[in-house]
Length: 84
Image (cartoon, rainbow, N blue to C red; front, side):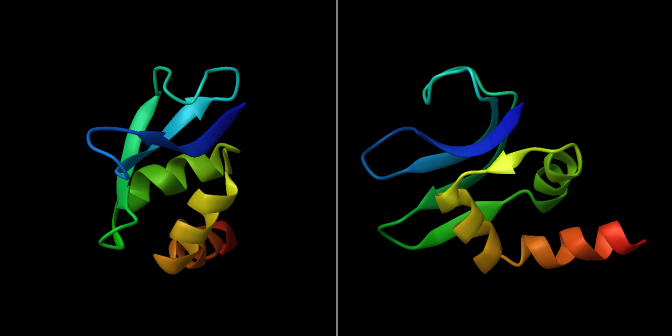
């Protein structure tokens, strides 16, 4: 099973949103990098088509990634794609 979760990178408080196997540790090798999150500056970059691809394949986002994706309105696009 695949999860969308945060992975620490670089300096403190900078995270990368990744698709990763649930058996891997947080800092393990990711299947694909799908975005960045900086909580200090409250900036987010998301590769929406990649996130939608993994959600369609059954990936489960963690709580924090779910909230970030919700603010970026990824789930609205996900529902629109499911209705087609």
